[in-house]
Image 1 (cartoon, rainbow, N blue to C red):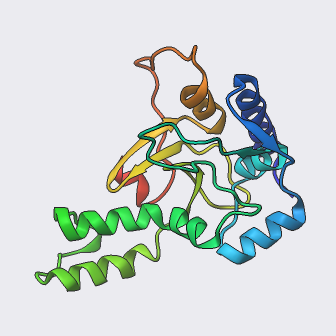
Image 2 (image 1 turned 180 degrees about the vertical axis):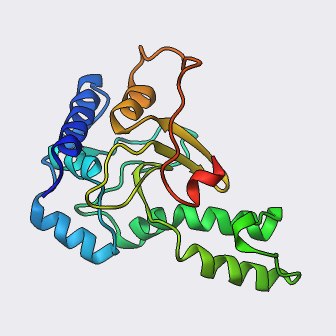
Length: 200
């Protein structure tokens, strides 16, 4: 059972995306499909993310030239499991790239090992404990976790992490609504996810 507020936010985000006319939708995911997906990938969708996907599954359209992601909407129903695992692993793999090639080291990890291979192994071990992020669209993510909702949507590119919306509804508005306007000075998404919030 998902929370009423999570269900409301997810349904409103789906309604707003449908209003843009930019995407087609398949029928939303069923409870049985959610159970299979969560079991297969070891995740739990946040309540608003679950309600969004239950309202209708966005369908990928042919990519524009130069687009980074050929299929930005995760195809939870019939997508390639390896590609979905890659998209789920994108945030952690991005941090590991920064550890290996850019000298990144999180201050909460203690002293960085002098040996590069040891540093990478240590980072991989520590990152196995950070909260899971679930892809919404391309490299935009929400934290996993049944019973949670209202988190900012995060854009993940290695250790370059920024908020792309105060919550899922705000994210849909900012990412897809042509009339969205500029972000005002009072726009301050609250960081909510341990470790990832430190990279904002």
